[in-house]
Length: 376
Image (cartoon, rainbow, N blue to C red; front, top):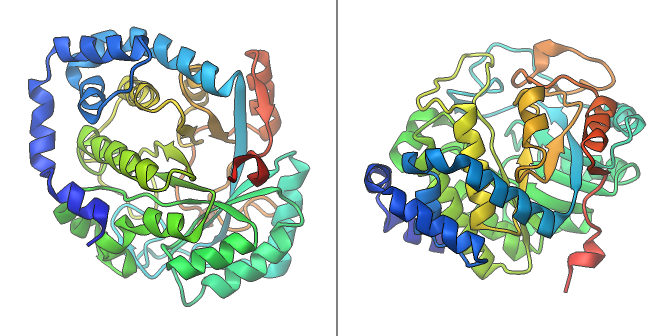
């Protein structure tokens, strides 16, 4: 069991969930006052800020979040797009369109197709991509990634990956080939319910997935992104454990940078239960709370959310957005929606999103920071 797994075991999931009902407005006010004075917030403060009692203070939280984000990141917004390499998957997950039991057409991009995708994405002006696959080590493993990176590093200066959890030595191999960041979401931190959603395959191993950010840190990767799938279980409780894992990782792997994402369940092949619906207002509350809790963390908002919502969140804590996203392999050079993992909401082009950002007085950042600026 990893160090964080032991720490997590000391906080019973249901005890954390029940504790939100007893949080008072006085605790919320105390956390806000501490933030306003530049103090460092505790996990208990974060819990207060995402509690129902913090609802009436959302406008105040938004103002603080905007100020802190501008102090740290300026008026900038980083853009990226996901590049889906394969929808092959060996897992059975009840909420995912790529789940092995779903009767969808499967494909894995050839190296020629990857080059075509890279050219199509580059033509949109993007310089930062996120490589995404289903989890199928036999079909889409490290050897395949190494081949793909040999092509993609010719086109893009920053490459992130969201693929199956790998071993430390495998992450180290990818780092040498130009991978700057790894995204891995625990989906839910409820150990027992996790087994209900992940029925077969390596993803059913709760602990191996939970330990992934630590292996990324050991491998010397520059940045790791974590989060939960909002809608599977009580969002407040899962968000608390995301914050706890972030705090743990920052203390142990202090050279790494961190990002958080906020994926809400979207319609997909095979359905997907939304057991804990989350309103847009609650999502705003969560994003602002994370910013008040951690001034340095990068906060990313994807095209799962609507154009109107993303436009309004531009100044309230978010630092990174996806743009022009296709969630199917080959979607940029040859669109085929039958292969997509889930449907997106913000369908605007990269140019339209960039125009919106500049119209609001912000600068578009087309690539992530160079490694040379962040290494010690």
